Each structure stands twice: as structure tokens, then as C-alpha cells.
Length: 70
Length: 178
Image (tube, rainbow over all chains, first blue to last red; front, side, top):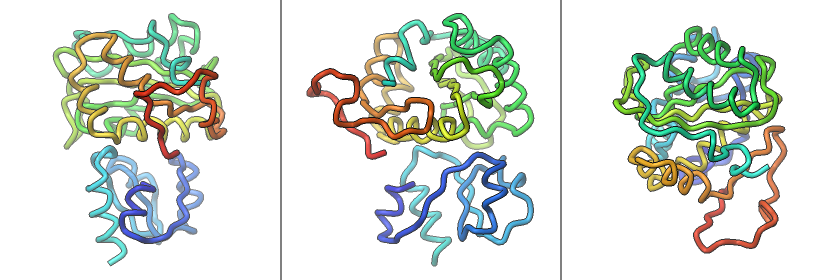
């Protein structure tokens, strides 16, 4: 995640959280990265939600983040 | 706490044949119970979490990371690796079938999240990841997992990268950026 942010040349405050913490913090976030399976659990949030399929794939993260901030 | 302490040699089994994902998770949980680092109920915790939230534990093609919450019976921070032969479906749309399970237990929520990012750091290295997927012996698994000095002490504290385990640096060691 941090590598992806660096590659995009942007700055971001990143908070890693489990699902219950994420739900509580969601209103403060611009973008939330999560799995397809967990996205529904976040409920109604204003943040943009990106679903990641392969967490070990830097390129997927970079591409999806790029799309979200475009 | 170094990864060698979390993932001890007796917490790795290779080429396990299971009939379904539940049995695969159980075999990983069994390693943790038998080595005294989680209570028996942690195994059910891992299975229930997976049932409840779906196959989200399959975080990359072929890789699942079963875990449950600290309060489900973690005695000390720990990690176990099980490789499956043949690979087993976990019901994930993109990342099935699963070849490798990395089960872990953390003692608090911060350590739990930290564990996830540490594992990602080791395995976001493509070479490490591919080697782990192809590993056919316990030694291969341990060589990959132990080659990283990336550490997680189970409490969410940052590892001491200057002196990771009190030993001098090895030539093969690559430091993570966590």
C-alpha cells in the first residue's frame, strides 16, 4: 500500500484497520481499500471504496488507486 | 519477537491432503494448538470467522491467511504454514484454489493488524511469493519465511531493525520497509 502511494507520487495518511474499526473510521476517510467480501460489511459510507483481489500485487493497487483519485 | 520465533519449524507441514477448506484450516490450527500457542477454541474461531465473512482470507492467488481474534484463545503471538496438495477451493471468485495457508494468532488488535501487514511485506516480494507457492519441502518454506528479517512482535510495536534477533546480519537478509 505504501509502495503504491509512493509510486503514484501522492501523500496519504494510511490507517490499517480491522472491519469494526474501519466501520467506525469510515467517515473520516477519502478512500477505503478492502476485499469484495468485506466491502458490503462497511455499510453506508461516503468514502470511495476500492476492492482489492490480490493484496500481493502492487500493480493492481496502483491501478485502482489511480482510478480512484483521477 | 522474530519470525523464527513466531513460525517455528514445528509449525510447518507440507503437502497436506484435505477434503475441503475447513479441514485445511483445522490442520493449520492444529499446529498452533499442539505447540501450545493457542487454545483449542481458536480453531473454531478461525472457521467461524471465515464462514461469517466469506473467503476474504484468500488474499492472493493460492494464498489464504486463516486467523481469528485475540480473544478467541491466543496464548502467544504465532504463525503456522500448511501447504496443500492438491490445492483446495475456498470459494473465492479470483484467488482459488488455495495452495498455501498461513495461519496466525495475535495477542491484541493492533498486533493482529500488524501481523497482516508484516505478512504482506514478506510476500509482496514476487520471488518470495512464487517460491512459497512452489515449495515442496519444509526447509524451502522456512528458508523463504525466515529469509526476511521483517518482524512482528504480536503487540503492534515496531520491530528493532537495527538488531532484529541479536545476531549479525546475514548476506541473504533483506530488510522490509515496514
